[in-house]
Image (cartoon, rainbow, N blue to C red; front, top):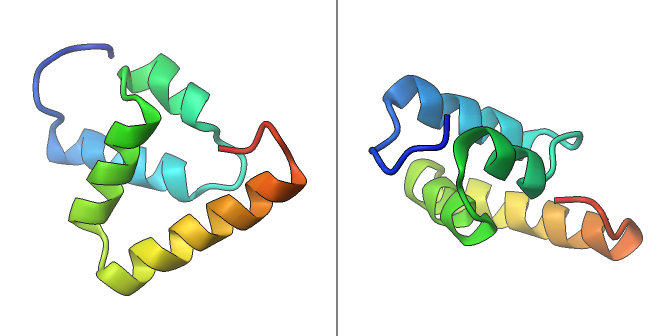
Length: 71
């Protein structure tokens, strides 16, 4: 769905679901929606509560220390 148009609420919800999954990488999100890692992080920051965003970022960072290809 690579477009320069704003994402619909349904697509935003799907991107958030993908980003929260431990089995979907930022590359997978980019392939489907054309969003770079920084854009996904910004979308998550805008749509999650601050504490939920921090928890998600910590989980992604901690997991990436163990597996190079995670998110």
